[in-house]
Length: 79
Image: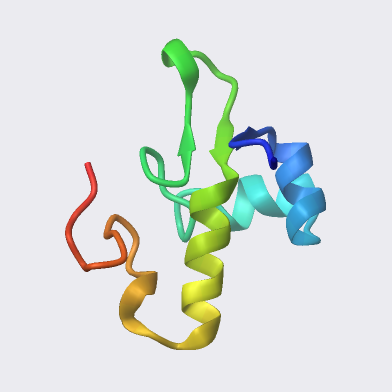
């Protein structure tokens, strides 16, 4: 079973990017806090939800309308 939450370094390896690209280009533009990543207990450490990121990447690459951040597979808003 794959890890649910991963660090920036692990996410970079999974996606084929550098950690700095994740932090400087993707975070807060396509990877959104509360959907794709979390800061546990209000700290500085960032943990990414790999399952959500992978799902959204696949949906976006298929060109369907499911790639909208914050929505589930039926189009309902996630909280």
